Image (cartoon, rainbow, N blue to C red; front, side, top):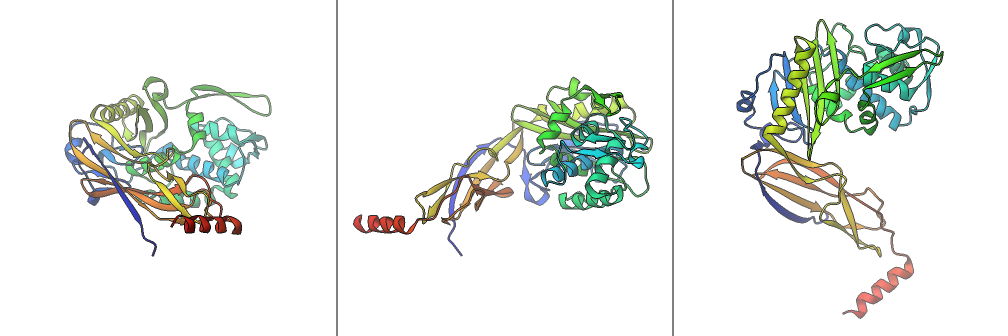
Amino acid sequence: MKKLLKYTAALTLGAAAVTAAVCGTAGRMCEAEALAQEISLTCKAAYLADGESGMQLYAKDETKRLPIASMCKIMTLLLAFEAEEQGVFGYDDTITVSERAAGMGGSQVFLGAGLSYRADDLLKSIAVCSANDACVAIAERIDGSEGAFVDRMNARAEQLGAENTLFANCTGLPKETQYSCAKDVAIMLRALLGHEKYHEYCKIWLEDFLHPDGRTTQMTNTNRLIRTYRGCDGGKTGFTNEAGFCLAASAGRQDMHVVSVVIGASDSKTRFAESAALLDYAFDRFESVVLLKNDHPAERQAIVRGSETTRLPLLPAHTLAAVRRRGTQDEFTLEYCIEPLVAPVETGTRAGYAVMYCNGIEIARTDLLTQGAAKRFTWAEAYREGARHWNSK
């Protein structure tokens, strides 16, 4: 086994106590129960998490299995964006709407059966106005049927660690054996927020949806926090008689980004008010601690042997971040474990990893990937390099 080169950089920062024993994906606050007493909600379930690390900031019956109505479209959109990235379809492709898709009830843009629409427009209508007909049209385009697409939804939920989620359709319309929970919705929303196209759609408040036959349907964003809450940059509403009024929302201020979920509020006004209260709670009580960003090179580089390029910058595969509660003190440390590479090295080669600790306890880690490539020495270059080392002795 190749020897690892280890470097440790310590940062002493104020932070909420974090322990690996209760961390979830990247850390969970050990004082969560005490914090939950600082905010009171009337909804059936709620969850608040740091958008970067997934660290829990507040929870109320977060794993209770409940209907979530149209918030299940978070998964529908996530799978659609992933399918586009995999080349299953393109945003400019046209999708012909089936009789079944056109016949969906509830929220819709009144697609015409047999008419062809741009995939981009269909996805936009799902994100902006929760169009059920567009959901089914997209599902049928990706997997041939809504049933097959639902199988994909459940498989992806399992991959994400959404342990209390079961989908029965892609719209969230009432159906037996369909449920999720506040924590799982937050997990799915965090995954969806990684797609830039989603953010493009979420900025839209009002827009006309143009049909191929000349009709126009006006789309209005169902998430009014986009207009009324500073920093809100995404989310998904939901309502059925069974689920009550629901909202998953995301917002960012300065270096901190959070997601909130409210399930089963008594009315629409309450779901928005309690969502805003959760977001306020996060921004008022906490601040972000970011040790590594996935779009910034790490402070350490990889050593390369057998190439004229002797060092390569490293990019973290994921951001390493946590949240600190204002006024508290904890020690965060960052440890690099970097393995020397032998040319040729391609861009994106794993060269080791970085680990984030809180008070000596690991809370997150990420791979370090080379930014740039290194070619192997040619025979002549290797001869010159060997001669140079010989003459330097």
